[in-house]
Length: 124
Image (tube, rainbow, N blue to C red):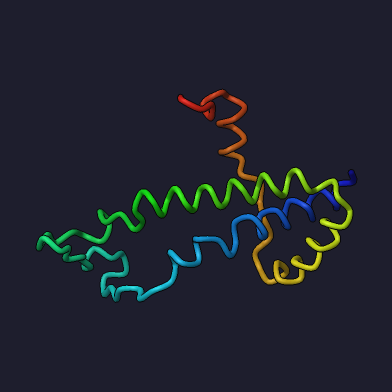
């Protein structure tokens, strides 16, 4: 596979497998107003009356996190097992017209370093 095709497929993978997932639902809603700019002046009042600083609030619960991770993992898996199918790649190329409006993807050197050093191993 030539480098241009490899980069095109990688960009398609990112867009098709992460974009328009449960992340969109988590992003929906009202963004609180902050006058400090760092949200240190924003608090959440829970049902028991606890006043929780914005920085300490979990913004998704365990079920939401599990559902999001399953959705992304299933999409990544589906993409990888389908990327040898020319028809799938042709359809995926149509999605790339949308991705043209995004920032160019970059290699995550920290991720590569963690994987290469063994510190990225499961359970470590």
